[in-house]
Amino acid sequence: MGNTIKHFKPDFFIPGFAKSGTSSLHDLLNSHPDISMSKLKEPVYWNNKSFDKFDDFEIVRYSDLFEKDTKIKGESTTSYMFYDSFIKNINKYYKEPPKFIIILRNPVDRFISHVNWLKGLGLEKKDINEVLMDEKWSNFNEYDDYPRHYYQFGLYHKWISRFIDNFGKQNIKIITFEQLISDRLNTINDCYEFLGVEKLGKINFIRSNKSKKIVFPYFYHFLRKSSTGKMKYTKIVKYLLPIKIREKIKSLMKCTLQNWISVKSKNEKITTENRNKLRKIYLEDVESLKKRLVYDFSEWEDFKL
Image (cartoon, rainbow, N blue to C red):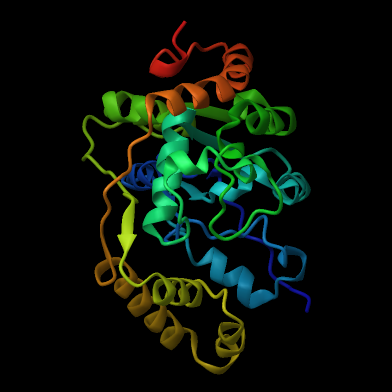
């Protein structure tokens, strides 16, 4: 099915790595009066398998995620980092590259948080020390809905180099999760300056997307996929129900997801031996990253010189 409407093109993107602080960054940027972040985080639009087949309805739905009267518009989809199709589509539809803000976290801590996150969602049965004994976690096949690519998502140099090579280092701002926690105002003001908007004198603390434990995981995932249109029946429903009714149903589903079936999770600990194992696994990539970005990442205790 063809389309007659042009794709809406945000000014910047936040691609990245699960459990590195992208949700908090998204919300902090959205708090600036001149910036509009997409109402839905992770719209998964520019790397969608059906991108070249989107009809007018899909294009308008994406465009409607943004407030049009703000100076700068941006969106956050972590999986953009890993898809060749994202790079291809950006190069095809943008005359000049957009900007990118990428937030990185100590890869050892990110790995641990990633495992605990999926355990809370009922998608990982092993504890973190058992995961490290399983060779499967090091593989990277097709990106799935709740990916278990624990190891690959911490190879920052590997993935960021593709963005630098395709979009230019001058269009990419790198910050760290640790900077955002320890020096929030200056770190986010650096991002504002990079985007060409005024710095702020103060900002509110925002910590988003904390890991939670799902009480009824199967029901949770059914609702979550339904609310994002990933169940087969939702593709039929979108042509049968008016958009206002569909949006109201989605809103109710998301409210249920956030407030009814989740509780605060208790993170599992990793042994000192396994933490050292993770450090050794990531050491070469981190050293390459330091050289590529000319930055020492001294805030990462595991990788201090």
